[in-house]
Image (cartoon, rainbow, N blue to C red):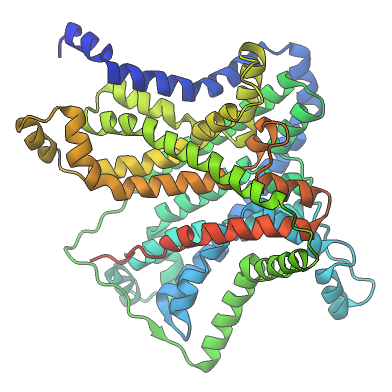
Length: 529
């Protein structure tokens, strides 16, 4: 392609539109970096001397602690499900994924109630250990570690299960033929060969932990996200908030680059033409009891007990008439905002994904990566950038739902783009070329030929973005119009005041809406054919 043709291609309407969209989506990240480097040196020195060491230690230690525990739980559960045949295995296979339906801030306020002094868990602990025994406070590292572990271990479980289902039995047979025991085979052969999946799961957990706001704020555990929110709402120090935001983004970038590098260094290929999967080991009564007890304890802590409490509190709220007419308004606000954001994301994400898949030039791929910057922007960081931008340059728009929808687009469009890209890539380009040869122009070809074929993938993208927007908390807290509350905001506000019963109805509703989508994750056929 000549320089003239490249220039003409860039200045055509569609590439110009996608470039403008990607620039808009990447602008919050660029503005945060600009604001951080524009801050006075005294602000940097004050933060390095007072806040940053503590926040860095807390964030890193929480990520490491949760990562280690989720690896143990995820691998253990996946190994039991894929290697042993016990009563109820089919049910537990999908039930273990259900904790993903509970937002972290909901689980946090449940365990705030359970772990408080004189609470249910402490009373049970004292029955076993004595009247003077005390369980750890929820407002501590232990509380944050417990909540984040129970909320994220299904990520590791899902990826480990997929890898173990597609594991070739020949590798283990070769190890055992060489004299290795079953445990040696697992630790020296099986686990090392599924290492890429384990690292991917650990990366998801780590990125989730360092960017979480809801749980750490309710548990009052000082991490970067909670400190950013405090700087914005308590001190109104946007310069300090920008510095902390930049450090958090760099932290997320580090994990993203490390995960990509490790994935490239840890590629394993199947050398044979057929994968022989391992037959399930039948379990007797005692083995079934032990396995079921282990899985039941984890499931109860992560999903069973919290949901039962929410059902009980919701019923009490309903009976006592405390739910109020405002509850319907919260439902409408949440669904309206989430629906508009997801629909707009599909509209602006379609040309981005289409150009990158059908015309993968350096420019189109660069534009697509610009739209993906929202991956490393935690909710408080994106909210900070938009809050500062609109208050300084577009104050007449600040305090409107438009700003909040833009924050959702910046934060959640990458998740939708992945699904849209995948759907478009599965359509043979020859079908579109045939349509064009019959007289259809590009837009008509996409509308009449391509879109019907990718409609399912686009629907998945819409649902993913809708649900993430429904559960989003920090950006909604900071950018919502005055008096405009959503389900997630009401949960946070009521739980912050320890009004657990009033927070239960919106929490239970979000879980019920999310469960069907979470269960779709278990419908995938993970076994290799």
